[in-house]
Every structure is written in C-alpha cells, then in structure tokens.
Length: 61
Image (cartoon, rainbow, N blue to C red):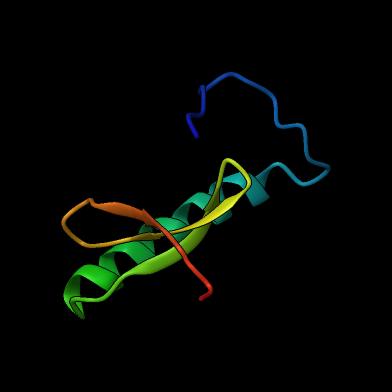
C-alpha cells in the first residue's frame, strides 16, 4: 500500500495508518532476523512472506 504525503486519511484517527505500516515493517525486520516468515492478507487471501521476498499462499491443508 502506498501513501501520499498530502493525502488525507480516510480513518477517524489518521495516525493509525502510520502505526499500522510501522508495525508491518517491524514484523518484516523480526522475520528477517529470526529467519522465519510473516503471514498477512493480500488481495483477500492469506499469504506467507519469507525474508528473501518470496510470497506464497498459505494453505490450510
């Protein structure tokens, strides 16, 4: 998700957008340090993102 500097937030609390982005960035850093992956929703589907940038769908088999 990209953010424009002068674009007003659609949320009641605009600081929430920055906080959510910072939280995701910290999760990526932690995953890289611990050599693990993070899970998040992308285009309505759960995916795993590995430290090397590889993104795979999360299968609940």
